[in-house]
Image: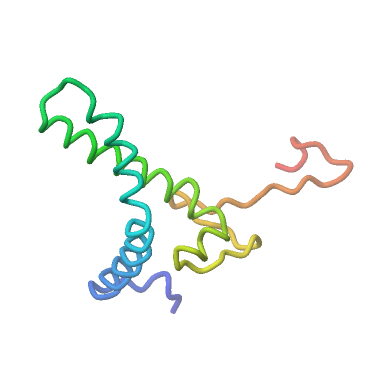
Length: 116
């Protein structure tokens, strides 16, 4: 029986989430303060209500940190190691949105339409 057909138990989902949260927490621990200070430096000068400033700083900082994590840190092996993640081999294909991205290799003397 293939392991893909076995449904995951609640404990397996819990362990998987703990692993992801641990990786992200190390990254957030190191970078949250500088991001909050820089964002706050610009937003604190605005002439708006204090509650709105707090919400803007919170959500803007979170968006910047999430973007840094998903777009930069996860993709650069050197940064992955710094933040406690395992290196990814270039031969491995990464799952993105449930799809496996496999590069298309062009064969000599064949057009793209002939490959289909």
